[in-house]
Length: 377
Ligand SMILES: Nc1ncnc2c1ncn2[C@@H]1O[C@H](COP(=O)(O)OP(=O)(O)OP(=O)(O)O)[C@@H](O)[C@H]1O
Ligand SMILES: [Mg+2]
Image (cartoon, rainbow, N blue to C red):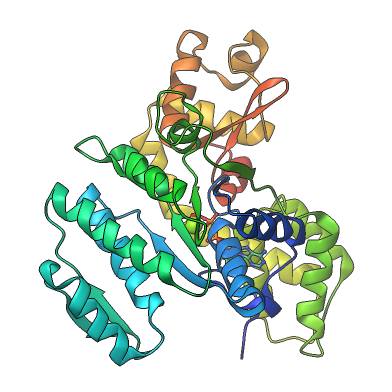
């Protein structure tokens, strides 16, 4: 059975819900030679959106596209090794040409070729070890990119990682220099750690300051998501009760990953019509599955931190934990409530959303929030 609700990767345009406005804006940004920084809460759909965008740029706008996720990079050298090899792999259509050209232009970095056992696609690994290697290999790859007949779109996912390198990174300054000189290459930077990512682009002391458009991703609108869910069932001559779709979106707050997860499990139930009892079963199954992980938070957190976490889940969202009636209601020591909240935000257990009224706090992992809400202790 083919499940149309993808939860681990982009499944192609047919299985991708909406994001039309975002796609139009991102295409306009790329085709007008601008860079962009895309950010959002975790698991809301940044990577999926990037892959959908690059699919459209490739098929409808004749772009070459490069995607790298730099979460595992740890230095400028490792970042550039990844970027240069990903670009080199995309630049040349023919495998033999790619191998010959990489051998010619990047021989000093001892290229190692391997082939993906599933797709057969070639992979190049380069040894970039020094600051000179960083500068020279980037210069070479940008020269080759600029000579390309097709425009090139590069997406760098989890870009905030460069702020975490042991040695201060110069990647932002170096990339800015090359991007200022090219019309052929546009870059999309993406990530979810808002403070780190936006500091790279909003801090006047940093090289990337004011160099990119900003886009914050939000939840997919209710109407679009509910139509999508219904349509995915109908494709297979099945149906899902309208009220169930409504309850799903309410329970998941339309957050993409959690909605996809619930729908994926609903779809797996071998019935032609999905009803309320099926949703109850799925919710129960999810809560049971995560229970051990969630119980462990009780041991990891102090009593006060756990109570703050639980009280935020019970309230769904809070503006402050300092109010006396709030701490009283949940037995929280009010003197350390703020300290506990700061800890939970730092550990990404609670998300701090900024709006025109200030900060709004809610439990980051929605399934954890639903579990905390439902337990007594
Ligand atoms: N518009 C969409 N329609 C259908 N599925 C989507 C959509 N956007 C994302 N998804 C799916 O939801 C899941 C989570 O999305 P994704 O990984 O893109 O989120 P993310 O914001 O990159 O998360 P993270 O912050 O953890 O990197 C993925 O399996 C993805 O394919
Ligand atoms: Mg992602």
